Amino acid sequence: MGRTGAYSGNLTVISSRCILLPMNAVGTTLHTSLSKTPGFEARHLLIEFVNGSRETKLIQMSNGSDTILDTGTEYDMTQKADALARDWKINEGFTTPKQNEYVFEPLQRTIALAMRLGFTILFDQRGKLPVTVPLNTWPGLTAKNSGIYVYAFNQEQILAWPTLPLDHPLSAFPADSKDHVNHLAKINNFLNTVGAAETFTLGKTSH
Image (cartoon, rainbow, N blue to C red; front, top):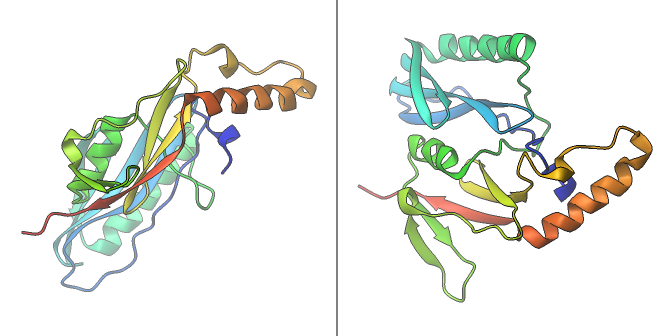
């Protein structure tokens, strides 16, 4: 996805459908993520394995907080998650993703999601030597020129993306569609002054 897709919160989502895991599976998987624009509103549906596929929890994460919605077999919770996602799309205006696109949110919400899925450390490889940072203390990136960064969880990575604040003048597109190409060029030029997009690998602390 090019940078022109990263303005005014109009960022799409990644959908991670959980697969049927072994009966003794443990841990938590990201089933589906949805987003709503304008802004960075997102909802994530997770499946937590309590006793393999026999006993699982369906969990919703929104605004960095989790709520247990139901318990049951993996199959039943997967079906319920799919039904919820359909309802949110039809009745509340949420969208599910095109391939290789992501849910972008403020930093702390993204960190909360990654930590709920078991990640505890982040590898920062921007310098000459890689640095390992506790995920819950990572400050994120500093944007320039009145821009902002938003962040997305990508299974084993966090993506940092420069974008416009929602109240930035460039967030409003001209009424005449003929002017959209020039407007997108202005947005892209602005984003180049905010900072670079970065990808950070995540890890889990061994116990």
